[in-house]
Amino acid sequence: MDNRTFIIGGIAIAILIGVGAVFFASGDPDGLESTALVIQGQKSLTGDTPPDAEIHEDTTGKFSFESPMPDYSLGEQFGPLGGIIAIVAGTLLAFGIVLGISKVLVAYKKKAKTAEANQ
Amino acid sequence: MHIPDAFIPIPQGVVYWLIALVFIALALRWARSEMSEEKIPLIAVLAAGIFALQSFNLPVSMGTSGHLVGGALAAIILGSPFAAVFILTLVLIVQGVLFGDGGITTMGANILNMGVIGGFVGYYTFKALMAATTNVNIAGFAAAWLACLIPALACAFEMYFAGTFPLREGLIAMGIYHALIGIIEGFVTVFAIKLIVTARPDIVDFALPVPVTQGVKA
Image (tube, rainbow over all chains, first blue to last red; front, top):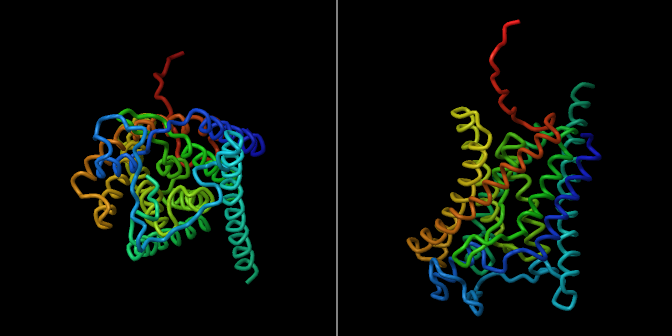
């Protein structure tokens, strides 16, 4: 498989997984959140998570940051479409940033080798 | 397993950031010496895949869900734990800054858990089990399972130091939930290894064992 096909195929699979997540991902808390709910007495270790369970976060003296697309969505008004846009943007951004930095590092390596050879 | 800002005091977050930065520097050194033009598409596609898989939470019973972490997958496919640090660091930055999945002051702890501990545990477990069994399915599954469980236990210790969880309860709950989540991690990792090895065996950093066939006399 050539590079072009591999990249297109890989990105397509990643986007399909991400879009699938918008519709089919479980709404249950993840392992860390579940543990926090157990510790805070809102959930038993092996039982289901109550629908009204909420993690109490003590933000006193802690850093606070508002991300532009919290919870992989663009807000309730955009619905699932907002989720799809957020996931696709994130997937392409993760791809682009890693691609860009990797290319810079390889170019830097090549340049250093050429300079070494010329000396 | 993405720790939010509210779970760790800022000074402790700084300590985890400093530890993570040491490994990020080593990962950049790995990338500069080991990365080649041919591997760039694989690394970038792996990052995109890990980002997407981390957004897909699957139910694991007990009112809990889990997703792939990806440290073992990246380290196994690229043949170095530093590959996991490199990819997971960039993925966690995108998740934390754009989507609020994991905090900013706690990003060092998240990189340390999922990238560093996940990558090292995954890589060396895979290497040891491949030497012992030569079975990619067993080695890949066990490496991924441990690369999910051990970082979760490390996270429980961090939560204890932060005063967020008591140690015993934290270890038990994090251990049980991530032992289950690790099963997802194991299956997805083995499937992804097979998929990537089939598509591009030339750029993967480990060789699948060649089946030993009985010689037939002519």
